[in-house]
Amino acid sequence: QVQLVESGGGLVQAGGSLRLSCAASSSIFSMGWYRQAPGKQRELVTYITKIGSTTYADPVKGRFTISRDNAKNTVYLQMNSLKPEDTAVYYCAASRFGIVTPRSRVDYWGQGTQVTIPS
Image 1 (cartoon, rainbow, N blue to C red):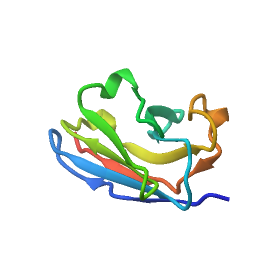
Image 2 (cartoon, rainbow, N blue to C red; image 1 turned 90 degrees about the vertical axis):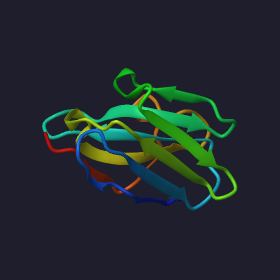
Image 3 (tube, rainbow, N blue to C red; image 1 turned 135 degrees about the vertical axis):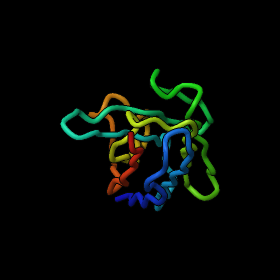
Image 4 (cartoon, rainbow, N blue to C red; image 1 turned 30 degrees about the horizontal axis):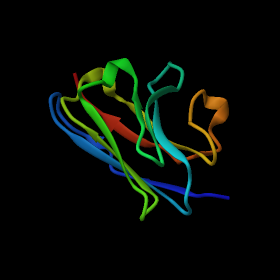
């Protein structure tokens, strides 16, 4: 069983930045982030594979950057130019052998961390 421990998140004004971190208890192939806003379905934000391939959802392209430290089994999400519509609970996701999309391929979830951008 792989444990995912998230950190970061919080409240920041529009246009500001936040960084999320997610540490896995052991090596894993792909890691990424989903988010869920109130009343909406959980959606993929971005993910990165062990070899560094990345994918971003259209709403965050050019503003969010995912990176990974394989030595620490940790993934980072740098979020810049934040908007009120980015407000959501952000969940770290991991897949042992594949990618973390669609949701059915996620093997492990983090506990979630709140990101709030007031309008």
